[in-house]
Amino acid sequence: MGLLYRKRIRTGKNSYVNVSGGGVSWSKRWGPFTFNSRGHLSLRLGNGLSFRIF
Image 1 (cartoon, one colour):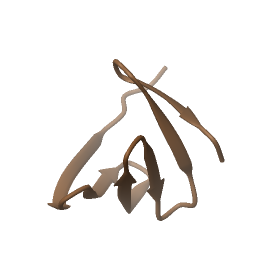
Image 2 (tube, helix red, strand yellow; image 1 turned 180 degrees about the vertical axis):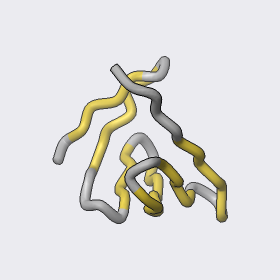
Image 3 (spheres, helix red, strand yellow; image 1 turned 45 degrees about the horizontal axis):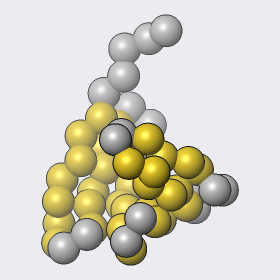
Image 4 (tube, rainbow, N blue to C red; image 1 turned 30 degrees about the vertical axis):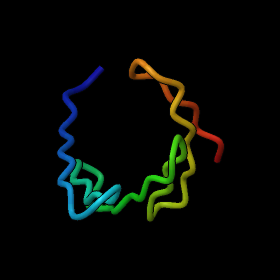
C-alpha cells in the first residue's frame, strides 16, 4: 500500500476536474453513470460503491 492523493473540483453541474498523482482528468456524470477523459465508464451502485464497466 502507498499514499494516494486525489482532489475533485466541481466545474459545473455534474462535471468535475480530478487531480491525482497520475495527472489531471475531467469527468462527467449522467445519472448513475460517470465517464472520464481517460476512457473509463463506471456505474454508481450507492453507498460509496461503484462498478467500472470499461
